[in-house]
Every structure is written in C-alpha cells, then in structure tokens.
Length: 226
Image (cartoon, rainbow, N blue to C red; front, top):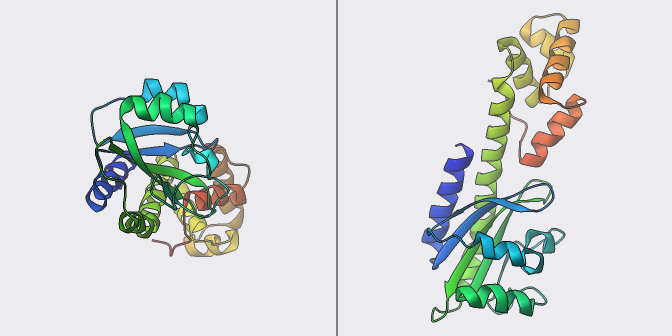
C-alpha cells in the first residue's frame, strides 16, 4: 500500500470507529512538524492554524517523550494545560469544542503521524468508551502507517538499483552478511562488497548499519529473502 492509499485507508477507518465533525490525518517529520494533511471535509483551517501552531497544546512536540498515544478534551485525556490564547483565538473562532488526538509511532517510539478529531459547539464530548476505542486502534494504525513508510522507502531505493543490486539489497534487508550473500548469489565476495558500496552511494547512507537503522526506524522488520 502506497503512502496516499495508507493515509486514506487510516482516515476512512478512523472516521468509522469514532465519528466526528472533522477528522484529519497528518504526517510528522524528523523535527516533529506536522505536514501532508488530508481531511474528511473540504474546510481548510491551515492559514489560521499557522498563526497559533506554536501555542497548540496537542502539537506532536508536546508528546514526543511520553508513552501515551491518545489525548483529548475528554476528562482524564487532556494535556496538563491548554493555552488560553490557542483556545480563544483558534478553537473558539472555528467553533471547535471537543478534540481527540492520536499519535502513530515507529519502532523506536518516534511520532510519525497523527489523527486529529474535532467536534463543534453543540456536539457531545468524546466519551471514555470512544477514547478507549482509539487507544485500542492506535497500534493497528501505527503498524499500517509504518509499513507503508517502509514499503515507500524500499520502493524508492529499489527504483535506482540495477537488477543485481536489488538482489543484494534484498538479502541485506534479510540480515545476511556479505559472505552469505556471496554464497547465495554465487558471486565473488569482492563483487558483493562493490554492490554494497554502489547501493550505499545511490541511497546516500554511509554504511549498511546506517541504511538498516533508517529502515528500522521507519518500521522495517527483518524478513526472509524472496
């Protein structure tokens, strides 16, 4: 599943599990900045939000070092303190009364994406049961998203490799050392080393450990070779 398909699948499923006036999916970069938003509605609140993003109590940076993944305005799920200027200048202006936020983390606990639910004035607060549903779905959504990230990363890498380099790369992903790759592909060890150097040069990583670490952070798990 590619990145866009994964986004839409998670967004559509999230809306079915816990309905809201608006549900939004966003990616999170290495600096913990949200981007790549897609929404269940056509409303665009981005311009106003950019004025208050530094005050957002539900911003990923506020939760990066926490173990919890689901927050909101429901009792027991909120941040320690909601910024009054943010509430008055952003939420109240848009009529947002109730919120729920889910963070999707990678294998090392880094936030890689998020889901934001909003209910307007006159709507009911998110119930404890709904927040529990979100907590239960969080690992599934996180796995779905990180799997899509890995597949996208691998596809980008594969697209620039020769057929033989792809075979070597596939075995690298399965955890095989150079000696075993040489035996499995029936090629000389120096040739394997040259292919590994070419793969690293094309992908921009300093060594195989760095390449595999990047894939692991995205959610890659060692797998049997094809």
